[in-house]
Amino acid sequence: MARIAEIERNTKETQIKLKLNLDGSGKCTVKNPIGFFHHMLNSFCKHGMFDLDGEIKGDLEVDQHHLIEDTGIALGQLFSKALGDCAGINRTGCFIYPMDESLLQAAVDFGGRSFCVCNAQLTNIPLVSINEGKESSFQTDCFEDFWQGFANGAKCNIHLDTIRGRSDHHKMEGLFKAAARAIRSATEIDPRRGGEIPSTKGVI
Image 1 (spheres, helix red, strand yellow):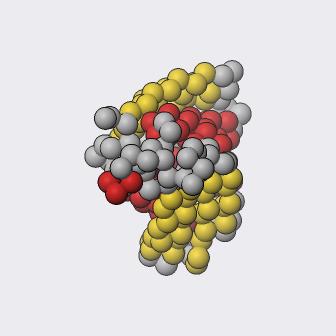
Image 2 (cartoon, rainbow, N blue to C red):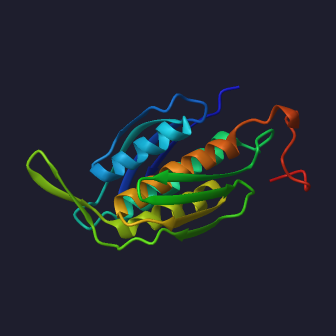
């Protein structure tokens, strides 16, 4: 059975339309106006083997917070819809990801309770890039907002920790990759469960 979900989230601040395939091949074809954020979603899909398609738009004339947080919420809701009652999945996952001088850890539990602990140790200095001769940036203080939104939407708890590191780029990218691998592990089907819900309560 295909584990695919679609969502359309429209507010006065953001317009988000996304489709997720949990059992994909790692393709991200999302139209995304924020360069570094696009890079992060690409990395997330590639390392989680998730397919994500669609478009995200928002009031970037205000700042990036609304769009990044709302995308996290929408992505989390997609996972919740695609997983349904979570029957047969591992439920939890953990991964440590090395990225040059940085070492990052992510742990997740799709147990029906929302909580996010983010110890990314970022400087909160925006990352600046050049695109077609124009300067753009990524608000690093929105990184935690994305994952808080994801946890709320997915009804999961997730812990993100920088064990050590110097570069904000490496810390964020490594945490997206670690989270992808942890989420991939948590959402994979365990054939030994025989389709049972992974909880002693019998329900997530």
